[in-house]
Length: 536
Ligand code: B12
Ligand code: SF4
Image (cartoon, rainbow, N blue to C red; front, top):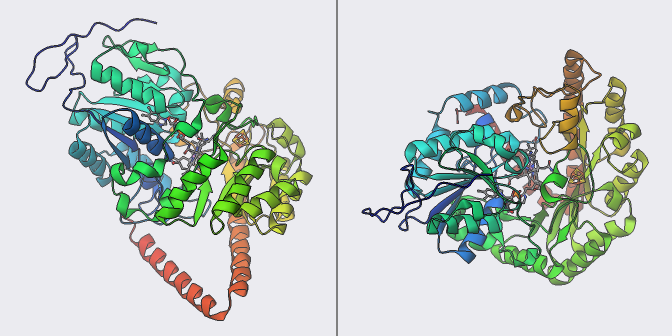
């Protein structure tokens, strides 16, 4: 570790602090931070976008408002105010969409980048915070570049899963000043205070930063926040800070996190590197009071975004009892694991609390493969879990993943054959992707499946380039994948139709006609939007 050079204060017209290398520090007159989600889905298709208030932006801005007098704006540049459509087709990030994605990363004169430029110019922040997943890192580097072109003195701070997993390598992008490792609520406060008071960043734990002599310095790790109940609710400050707040549908604010961390150790997932396997829980009371705020805002259905809803049976019971008591006409949806849903009592508790839909990590239809990826479940237990959920009126959508490094043609086909036996309400189909921070990322490196210089922004669960299997030749893998995507799309269409018939049967003729006409209208609007495929 090195110590940053000394910073000197000069007298300027705007009380600007200038350091010894001449670049401006944060002015007392400009305590403004813009926090943003970089574009990703919009780069693929103009009509696909992230209709959501990213929780990282909500938590960070809440913390800044509570603890500092900085002004904050949050901005989801992956939301298109004119078009909100999304798709459930499995190949939506492939084909023409993928070509467009690549060209948008090359051509920075496109309207999407103009929108980003304009937002930065108009708000004129002294600090730009960008939240990152590996897939949108390249997009984020473009945002950082645009920001520095507008004002070279803007401090660019990144955070999120990709920042946390990739250490100092993110500084290959010359426009990044600071990377936040792990949780950001306290780190961002200390960072803003350091900027404002012009003290050394060395004293801020949990960051890596570029000092004035361009050296990359890492500070000691940031301790996890012990009391998650102390955090502000993202929705509370959203109307004040979130750009275009009023243009979002209410559902964009229906996401809630009840815990941080996951006790499981699936090798394709990097949750343990980010949050650790020790789970931190919010109290059921605190969760319910956040959901009450969402209820008052007009929401009647919320989504738990936790890695695994509730985690322990005891906690699940406690949350659901309170939900039932305090919010009887609110429903929720969540992600769960077979280990929990195979227990009918857990499922009953969830139903009691208002759960109507779940996504369950099934992944493979082959027991050996499940063991290899440390998914602690058997195929029989998977069937039991889906059965339990459906029996109690909870939709069960299955995450299925193929293309693990040790996948063979046989295990691939077994997984496809398993889907009808499992009979989920739909399949969320993914091709394995080695995410930095996951165990399999390092396995892929050791096996030589991925190169040292691995550009992860080209890969994601639906990327047409994904092929990380050792035993299936690439051409054959792509063939199997094409067939699988067709099979899954077909399965999902049929399953959706069946669900539709069932729900229409339950609601009667008049309501059926109303629903059917709005469905036809939806198709018509969707068709128009698909025809209007303008570049983003
Ligand atoms: C909800 C979710 C989604 C949603 C919405 C995402 C969104 N933008 O809001 C959807 C479904 C769209 C999605 C999509 C994808 N996701 Co996702 N997603 C999640 C999930 C479950 C929760 C995210 C969340 O809200 N967390 C809660 C907030 C509070 O945590 P946080 O975002 O990490 O932020 C904290 C810190 O990281 C830090 N921080 C974050 N940003 C910043 C910025 C600054 C400036 C600072 C200082 C600090 C800071 O402070 C925050 C507060 O403590 C996470 C898993 C998880 N447990 O986090 C996966 C996760 C983030 N997703 C992941 C992946 C892989 C994807 C996809 C690539 C999947 C795919 N199709 O292939 C896409 C990529 C989309 C994209 N835009 O790039 C991976 C990322 C792995 C990686 N190395 O990047 C994760 C970690 C899941 C996993 N365990 O593997 N995702
Ligand atoms: S895949 Fe889900 S259950 Fe497995 S470690 Fe990741 S978050 Fe936990």
